Structures are given as structure tokens and as C-alpha cells.
Length: 160
Figure 1 (tube, rainbow, N blue to C red):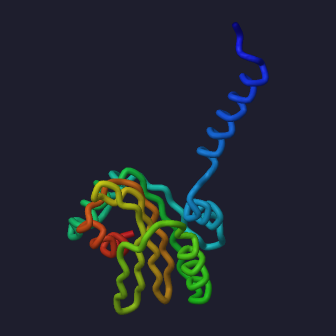
Figure 2 (cartoon, rainbow, N blue to C red):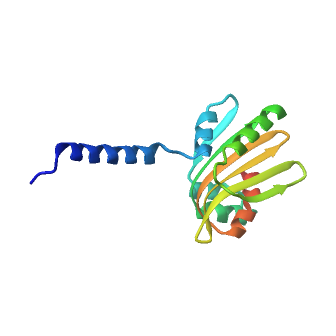
Figure 3 (cartoon, rainbow, N blue to C red):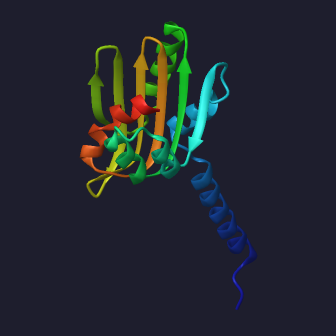
């Protein structure tokens, strides 16, 4: 006995919908990255973290350890007008989605906010927004970072 054709077509349709929703649904910060990566004077890079760890100054072993723990790294970097920097930072913070705040650090002239998702005690996905008077930096990464490595992300932001 064969199943009715309508039921078979319905199952194929449902599987197709589930697959396309899973592949096209992105996090808002990913959409933000795609939207602004080609902006005027915006530097956009996708860098293999293992290669980036070889370029980082040897005086910062914490930054090297963070990069070696990551599996993907990309960033947006903008130098320019303070009003534009504030606009970029505000939009990036609005695109945080469901990521909770992991670290907020205010240095003398820089504000750093790190958001991420923890799983089994490690941070799997994260992004950091760094804002100063002359620079906006958005770092998006994937990997397995410990809580102490998350505390060293401001050092990595200085090196990038």
C-alpha cells in the first residue's frame, strides 16, 4: 500500500520549510555586520584566529590565548567622526538580540561591552563593542572561551 501523494508532498514541503528557516535565520548582530561591512571608511575583515594569533604582539599572551581558543573571528573597524561612532555603537548594541552582557569595562577613553552565550561553562559565541572618541570596533567571534579569557577581551581589542 502506497502513502497518498498529498501526504508525501506535504512532508516534503514541511522539511523544505524547516531547512530554509534554519539556514536563513541569522542573529541580528550578523545582519548588522553584513549591513555595515561596506560602509564608507569602514574596515571589515574576516580573519582566521589562529593566523591572527601569530601576528599579535608577543607582549600580550592573553590576547594570543584568546585567539587560539577561537574558531572564527570577524570585525568592523571605523575611525572617524564622534557622532558616527556613537551611531554605530548604538545600532550594534541594539542588535545584541538575546545575548546577555558578560563584561562591561570603562577605561579612561574607551567603553567596552562584551555579550555572549555560555554553554557548559564556556562562552561559545560572543561579540564586543568598543567605542572611543575616535574609533568604533565590533568584534564577533566563535569558540570556547573561559570566563578569565573573556576578562582579557579588552586587551585583544587594543591589539586589533
